[in-house]
Image 1: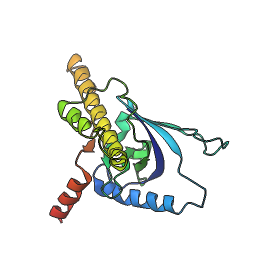
Image 2: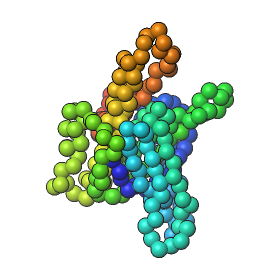
Image 3: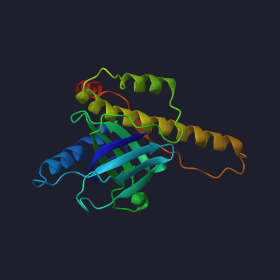
Length: 213
């Protein structure tokens, strides 16, 4: 899928998955955004989720030349470990990336990227992602045309979360099919990919955290 969003930025995370590892980075990025000088705004990017990964690229949306430094970044699906809709800022979608320095001792390999949903329409699904029935039902629930604009902005973050979950499902399916086609004796050792998507609503996450406490 494609969504036009504001890019909050990136911040170090302290773990592979779990909202406990995205909450503080999101708080820091939101605080930094609120502290921007008058007239300075967050970059607008086109966020594309496909079966291969996540691509973001700055979008020119005004007549001001060089308003933002052009950015075009692709995160391979294998480098993404977690995605979630924030429980405090419900228009925010965040994900954890495992950087290439994961094997370098002393360097933090986890990076949280966050986006503020600011468009109220779903543009399209990318890369022939085939979500499960459960994901299809969830996607239908957040695309109700009778919802208010604020509901739709919040639900855009949900759609991004579900789309990344569908991409993870497709990746798992492809890996299993590839392994099934290979001779067990010739199959190279492969590190098991670990990733997670939190499909709970912000209210459900908050309730579960209170229960755990």
